Image (cartoon, rainbow, N blue to C red; front, side, top):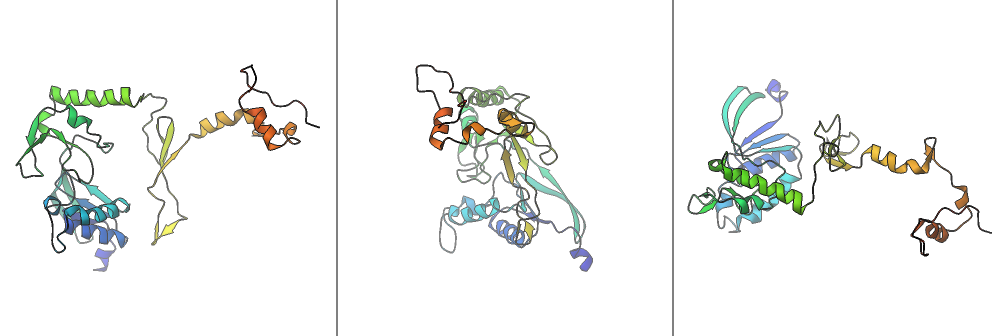
Length: 282
């Protein structure tokens, strides 16, 4: 028994219904890393499909929303949707599980903007409502889905319709958001050994051992967004001398109001920038 307890302490929970959610959350909040596997594209199971559920006869989103919030706030839980267990090998404390993951055809960057659904034409049976109605080939599993990401039906993959959906999203990024991706501003790399870069900012995964909450390092895994060091260095170069902040003795004998006036926008007829005062004031 002791050998089993000293093995791999990650817990696999199969099924993301209300029972699976509760088991995963209780284990993770006790300090165990958890992998939560669900065959549907969303968590919540049969409860999410109900009108009301026992014992308080509340709508499903009443109880599920609380659990989803706990999931989001717990970095020990890994969620894998559209996945099914194919094989389990090993022994107690050291199991090896093989999963078959079905494609969603939409990655984790989805913001649920709905543009792909608007561009879709084909309709397919709605699995969430047991096929009793039709939905677009690009659709949310349901309005309260978690993760809140669209699903693209396999029926349209490789067709002209799929290309039209991609083109509509590209047009939105280019024309509406004015986003222009370039090699200079976009860099994909390992976020721990080198910062990934997007739109000129560095994106890193924070790591630290000083902040301990409930016996674990709470900072680990948090996403950090920062201005690149090279940009800061370039912007501050004009105020540096030999690697140190340059002294401005001419400002020592004037008050704050005059400093701001001398460096602010020019109020005269000339539009040129006001220079620093050459001599101190009497």
